[in-house]
Image (cartoon, rainbow, N blue to C red; front, side, top):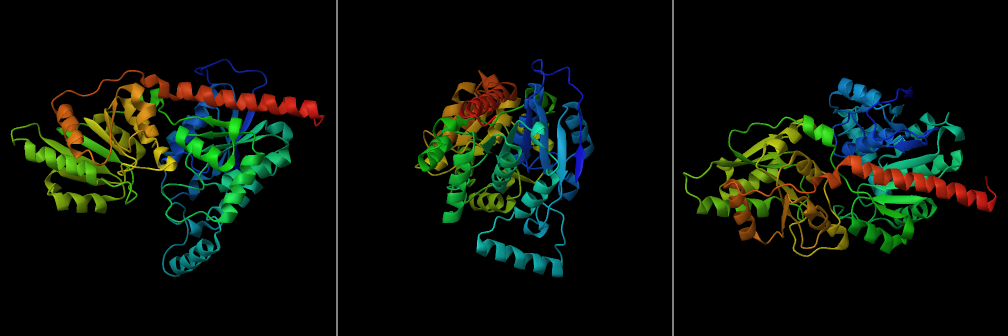
Length: 450
C-alpha cells in the first residue's frame, strides 16, 4: 500500500476553504490515470470538492495494476496541483478482471483464470471482491479524526459495502454515489439475485444520503427501496477548463462522430446508419462530402451494419483511443451521436440512461443527435443547452432531415450550457455532503451518541 499525502492549497479554487476543512474519504475504483469512462465522474468529484474546501482522500487501486493508463505522469501532477490525497491499494484476484488488470492471462494462466471466473459467476460472487479486502487493509490505519464522511462511487458496488464497513469503524456517515443502477440495470440481461437486492436495500437503509445521475433512475431506486429524502440527483457534466484545452481534430470534411460502446439490441448504430443511407440516396455527389467516424471497441458491429447498407465508403473505424483523442474528435466533428435506446417504448430504467459523453460534446460546443425513447431524461435534461436534438429510433426521416440541416450549416446553437459545468455540479454535491455531516452531527447530539 502506498499513501501520497499532499497539503498544498491551490490558489485557483472556487471558494475560500473553511477552517478546519471537512474531510471526505472517497472510494473510487475507477480513477485517473485509468482510461475509463468511469474515471471522468470520479476525477471531477475529487477535483471540485477539493476546490470547494474539502480535504479529499481518494482510495483507488495503484495505477501500476492497470493495463491501460493515460499520461500517468501528467495525471500525477494534476492530482498534486489539486491537493488531492491518495491511498493507493493492492488488488487481489486480478484474474477475475483480466481486461483491466495486469495478471497472468496467457497459457495456463488464461485457463486457471477462466475457471476462477466461471466459479465466481456461478456462485454470484462479485468479481471486484479482491479489491474490497485490499482497500480495507490499506485504510486500516485511518482513525475517526481522519474522516468526516465516506463517499463511495459505484460501480463497482462492492465499494458501497466497503463504505459501510469503514463508516461503521470510523463512526461517520457514508454516502452512495450511483453512476449506474446496481439492480435493475437496463444493460444487464440477467436478473439480479435476491441476495444482491437485499444487500443493496440494507446498504441504502444505513447510508446518510444517495446521489444518482438522472431523475428516472432516482425514481426507480426510490420505488424499489423507498430512499425518500435521502435521494439527490447529481448529474454528470463537463469541466470547462479541460474542454477549453481540447484541440479540435481537423477531419478535412464534414464528420459525424460516435464514441463508446454498443449494447444490442437496445443500443445499436442501425437507426443512425439508416438515416445516413437515406441522406446518401437523396444527395447529389456534388454535395458536401461527409463521413461517419466510430471510436470504440465495437467496430465489428458498425462494419457489419455499414456493409449491409452500402455505407462502407462513408464509414471510418478508429478503434479504441484515449479519452483526449476521443474529445478531440468530438470537438472537430460537425455532429456528435449519442444513443441510449433505439426502442420507441422504454422502462423507467431505460429512460434514466444519460451517458456522460453527451456532456463532453456540450462542453466543447458540438451539436448532438440523440436517439432515445420519447420523454427520456437524456432529452429532457439537456434540452435547455440548445445543442441537443432527440429522435426515437423509428424516426429515420427526421434524423436524415436534421443531419442535412447540419451539413448545410443550420446547426443548433449553444444556450445555457453552463448548467452542466462541474463548477456548478460540484456545488450541488458539496451541499449534499455538508448537509449530511451537519444533520448526522445534530442527530447524534439529540440522541446523546456524541
